[in-house]
Image 1 (cartoon, each protein chain N blue to C red):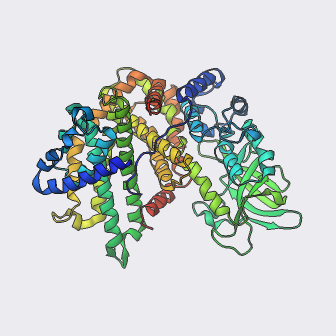
Image 2: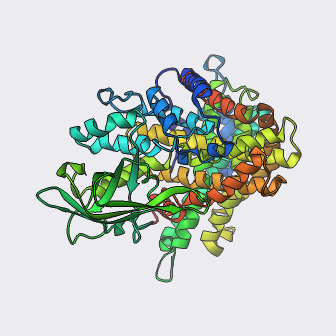
Image 3: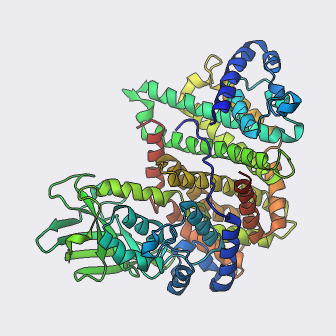
Length: 379
Length: 239
């Protein structure tokens, strides 16, 4: 990991025009609803917005044109994603399908899976969830126990997933299951693409401490899916998931979840802020600017076909700390009652409550630091 | 790194090794003062990417010599200091990793303990952040012809971020080294003491935070994002 140098972020085409077009589109199409929905907006579900965004060509941008995709460069997609997040657009419905399920289907899926799922993903109409965590397998993902037995009719699935974000509105789940009887740890796992309307699947809500229904428990009771549900290579599920997590960790969502609060803080401070507020805005700006450089560099490295596992983890670790600290630091400096009705007050309260999840989702802080330590040669 | 820059860094390492014993004279004699001077004016014709690379080496090898002052104008000394700091922090991390991988306690290397691993991961994140800040500042400076006013935002952000990293980087480096890192004989203080000094030179944390904060307040909430993106888009367009 020594000698880290920034990788140049240089997307093809006119980047400024890409931003201008998208900002103009958002000015017309972004719902003007509750300001609080703009914070943590990649958890904000709005099917109408997703459909409109898909029709405008901003979903599945990197997917092949024969499946409706835009065949654009990954860094063009990066520009679009950071714009959507900075604007606080409600991208939650299609977020996972666009970010990881679609690309993973292209990379490992069959032609049949591509034809079946990708056009709906690109239209912003087909939503996906990720079946990784189980009651006994959270940070320790290799402890997965949900089984899929191959029979003459197809795969028979039994077991349970938990903390599954968006399972209640998703059409498909990409699940990590144990296909090889008697296998242990990260061997013998495979990925199955499961239609969630298949008989035998029960989805139950878990309400989070903010009162929101984002995640779920998903039960599989002798669920039968066709042989063709297998994604990629049987027994290679662990390797495929590990590659998928690289896509998940370094994106701009790792430092922009609290951006609506930062913008509200700057607006509330006015053009001539008091000294303590000016210092806070300056510190947060410096951190955000630095994180953006790290995230863009990591995206450029990924786009060049390299595997920046450690850099991606650095982005997640620093980004989570930044967006988790931000509401706490704002509260420490700005006098704002708990029930303050201003934009700043409502965003502050919402993000203080939401922020504990930031260093849990996508790999806990301790797991991420362990990955970095391995990159340093300590493990 | 380009081949020309690699050669430049190799030269810097050789010259700085001599300067570490003899003072700044060998650096002057080797012509480093001409690093940014155009070739048609008898200089090396380097850019800030070169300065960043050379000063990262200087931050490790000759942190107490006025190498930056030799190469850059006063207005760019905050930017130069970020490069020195990035180099010194990289060295602090290297020394720390080497130490915990060799020093045995309780029957195994210190680096095998999770508590130590987690500390060093935190430190590595800080070091990577400062290296990224130095690199992004270099890209901006080169895109605007080394005009300090046109890179004011980046210079403030980079120096602020580098300053803030000093606390964690120096404290974790010393903590994982134990008593040996606190001795005059061992090399760690040769980078950690300069880091403490650089944090307060050419603008401490509060100075740059207040300056940047006032600039951003003038932009407004939406304006910050617009400014941040157009300033980096300029760099792509000029590449």
